[in-house]
Structures are given as C-alpha cells and as structure tokens.
Length: 63
Image (tube, rainbow, N blue to C red; front, side):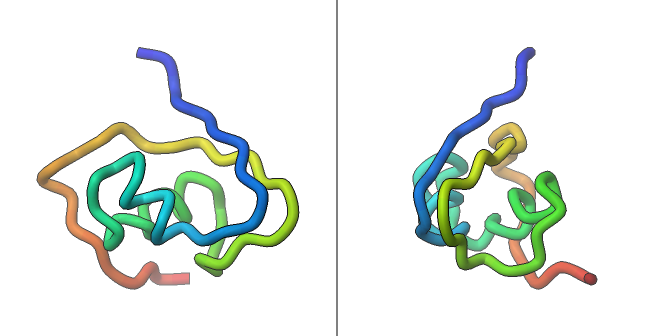
C-alpha cells in the first residue's frame, strides 16, 4: 500500500485527523509520522498520513 500524502495551507492536525483518520484525537499519529510536536500548522505543509486504524487511541505525544 502506498502512503497517503496531503499538502495543506495552515490549519491544525486535529481537523486533518478528523477528516482523514475519522478521529481528531489521533492527531498525535500524524504528528509522530511527520516529526511534529505542535498541532497548529502555518504556511504550506506536506504531511504523510498514517493508515486509518480504528484501534489506535489519541493522546499527547512524548516529545
């Protein structure tokens, strides 16, 4: 399976996780996949999205 990549202009990882992963609390998975610690994005950002995993839980990353 190929990875999913999206390009966004600003925004936040909560909204992206809700849209693409179906759960805003999974923003941390997107952050980890892209080596980010802040869920707020500025400028044009290219993000690699992890696969949808209904068993995954959200939370605060250890950074």
